[in-house]
Amino acid sequence: MPIASLSPVLAVYFSALAFAAGACLGSFVCCACSRKKEGESALKGRSSCPCCGRRLKANELIPIFSYIALKGRCRGCGAKIDILCPISEAVLAAAYLAALLAFGISASALEAALFYTLLLAESLCDIYTGEVPDFLHLLGAAVFLVFAPFDGGASERLISGLLGALLCGGGIFLFSLAADKALGCETLGGADVKLFAVLGLYFGPAKSLLAVILSCAAGLILAAVKRLGRREAFAFIPCISAAAFAVSLFGDVIIERYLGLFAL
Ligand SMILES: [Zn+2]
Image 1 (tube, rainbow, N blue to C red):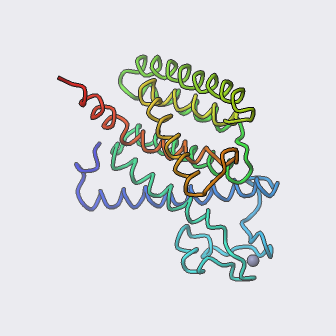
Image 2: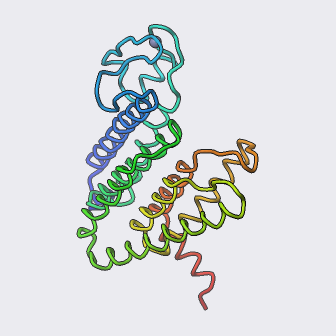
Image 3: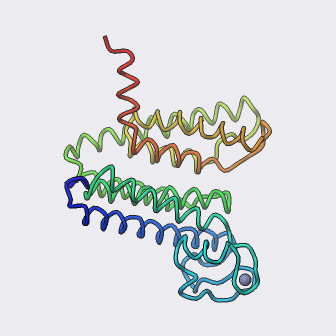
């Protein structure tokens, strides 16, 4: 059901709900990933300041607003709160809202929201630890398999997804092997290749090619902004995730416009 077909009150209600759900999930994902960095259990224990160990009160756990109210510092010791926390909360809140506006109240919106949550988790794991656990890729594939039947042409989407995973994952894998050999260093991590295979599943061959192009463009822009040297390593998964987010919302329009350039 498109959001525009709802009454204004209901549209605002569902938008606020999507925003709040995204902010809360963003907070949870960031907390779990940062605990992994400290070598702690990702899911156990109450939230506390990593500097002074003070347990956070309920009013310090409200996503986005707590960070603003506390001016980015722990109330106990004054240590700076990790800026990635409010960023993750705001990004996933905006992503959930975008999924609702683009896909309405539907299975596709729920699938997109889960997909964005996984992309955020993979990005944060890469930033914090430089590693992405395989279960996140498997979870991505599982979400695709669960939601494929809801998409009308289920068998079409399955075939296109498998072909995309094979071409995108396989193509990037072969490219990284050749590039490693030519440059004499590791160019892409295993997690990057696996995520491209998952994107192939979601997007099929054409849109996953677009995701690859946009990921490389995002990587080049980031390297230029951070003034990285040619062989300096950096977390590439946030670039792939940003590209995947753009493709999930605008992929069809971009490809249509591009093909339109060649239409007679
Ligand atoms: Zn503290």
